[in-house]
Figure 1: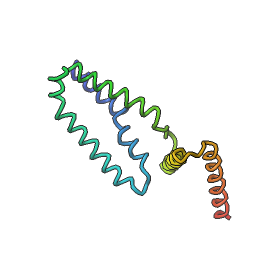
Figure 2: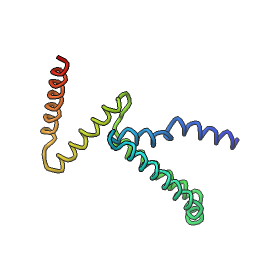
Figure 3: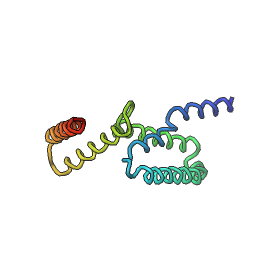
Figure 4: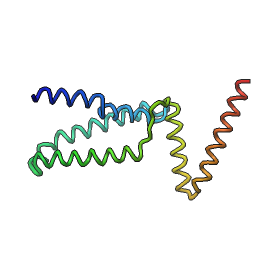
Length: 141
């Protein structure tokens, strides 16, 4: 029974939350820093996994096995809520479109910090799209 439970865990993890770390990180970084950023993300992931491995037995002694898994469950729920609220849906988008989506969000955050209103950001985005369409059509002619 234990072997089947472990195999089930590995199977569902591999098609579920497992690849999210790698795919999500690969999508959020712009092309010009993607390789360096992914190496930093991979190093951070491995470092945190090592810290968890090194502290797991000490935490079990302090808060018990149930407490440790409860802690992991709470952290998982918090992470899931954070991802749901702040990580955009990228299904069906090319890497260029994802990069553009994050750049627009970053520009929007900069403008909000400067005190400009959301309406001006939307009109700026529409102007950017119109200018891009005009430049594309003039290049094609």
